[in-house]
Length: 290
Image 1 (cartoon, helix red, strand yellow):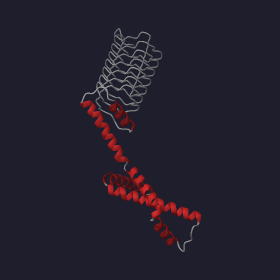
Image 2 (cartoon, rainbow, N blue to C red):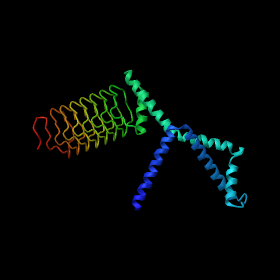
Image 3 (cartoon, rainbow, N blue to C red):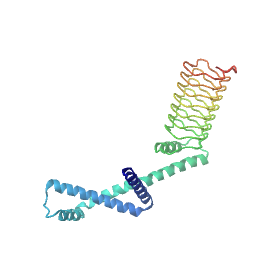
Image 4 (cartoon, one colour):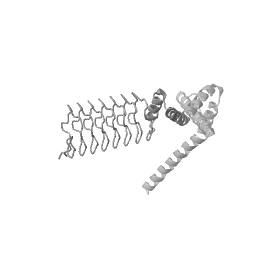
C-alpha cells in the first residue's frame, strides 16, 4: 500500500513538472505571473523575517500581523527591488528559450557552411563545440572536407557521422562515440582519441600519425592503408579489424587486442607489440597466427 502511494505521488510530481515546463514554454503571460508571484513571495518572506528579528512591532493576532506584512510589501520603497527581482526571475525562466535559440543559430551556421562548401569556418568550429558542450548529439553530421583543426569535441556523440577528408589535426575526440563514422582520408595527426568508441569506423587512408588512441575501441574497424606511425595504441581493441597495408612504424601497441585482425602487407618496423593479443591474426605473409 505504501509502495503504491509513493508511486502515485512520484507520478503526480512528474506530471506537475511536465505541465509546468509546457506552460513555461508556451505562455509568456504565465511566465510573467509566475515571476511576480515568486518575487512578491520572496520580498514578503524577507520582510517578515526582518521584522521578526528586530521586533519592530507587535501584532494583536497572527492574522493581523500577516496582513500587515502583506500590505507593507506593496510600497514605493520596495518598487525598485521588486522590479529588479521580477526581471531577474523572468531572465531565469526564459533560459530554456535562449538555449533553444542558441542551438538553432548554431545549426544554421553549420548548415550554411556546408551549403556554401566553405572549408575553413571558425564560426562552424565554435558552433560544433557549443552544441557538444550543451550535450547536443552530432550523430549523422556531415562535415566532409572541413577544416576543424584543434576542435574540442571531447565526449561528443558523432555516431555515423561523415568526416571524409576532414582536417582534424590536434583535435580532441577523447571519450567520443564515433561508432560507424566515416573518417576515410581524414587528417587526424596528433589528435586525441583516447577512450573513444570507434567500433566499425572507416579510417581507410586516414593519417593518424602520433595520434593518441590509448584504450580506444576499434573493433571491426577498417584501417586499411591508414598511417599510424608513432601512434599510441596501448590497450586498444582491434578485434577483427582490417589493417591491410596499414603503417604501424614505431607505434606503441603494447597490450593491444588484435584477435582476428588482418595484418596483410602492414609496415611494422619498430612497432611495440609487447603483451598484445595476436591470436587468430592474419599475418603479413598470409598465415594465421594460432
